[in-house]
Length: 259
Image 1 (tube, rainbow, N blue to C red):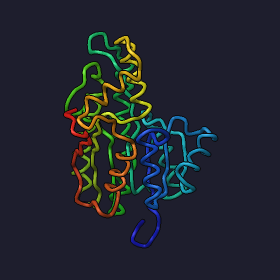
Image 2: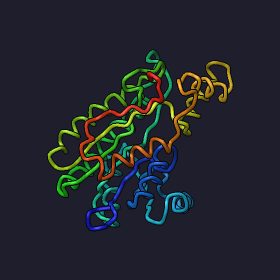
Image 3: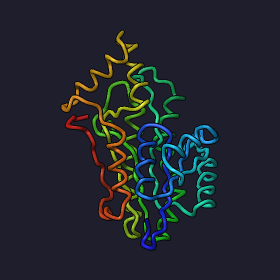
Image 4: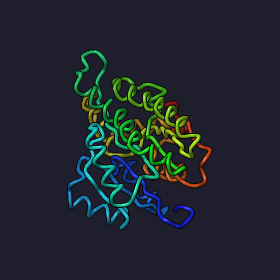
């Protein structure tokens, strides 16, 4: 809420599943209006589900973060409905599992454009209004893979490392104007993306997906997978009035692991 009790406007990219959905729910509980952008944004059944799972003050709109025109159109729709965004959470992300040797260019570009160019385009669209209003919160969902690489994930690691650099540059640009920018870097989180990655790795190793996921959990000192709601709770705090000095940080949520 603003000082006058008006709900703040929050944008969450990729907010229909996983960390993005949990973040949308957490921000809605904090009293914000939440605009979710997703490639499936035109799905009426999905919109109805999100109203049930997130709340009445939610809108779903088509968004492809890789496409400049789509980003501009999405932000214009949010502005027309509710006004300019006060909060931006860049949660949309994908990965492609393959070693550098023989890595095809198309999936490389898709990962880089989704995980790095997308947050740049969204930030470029939202930051000027935040600066003008003297208040803003930007949170980029990065990864522990940005600092400690994973084998067979070169595009993902590169994109998330780049996202840390973008985070720091935006933090400096916004600092004199009450705008913060923070990266949140989880280890493996129990999401659809993890299950998909585990299934691919399981096929390569001749194992079941459940066995692969169990090994991932056992590699964590806490012997468990981080839950989306844990990341969402941190993001909601970073987007609150209580966190004006938290900026330019890369906050690792690793449950004791080094990766």
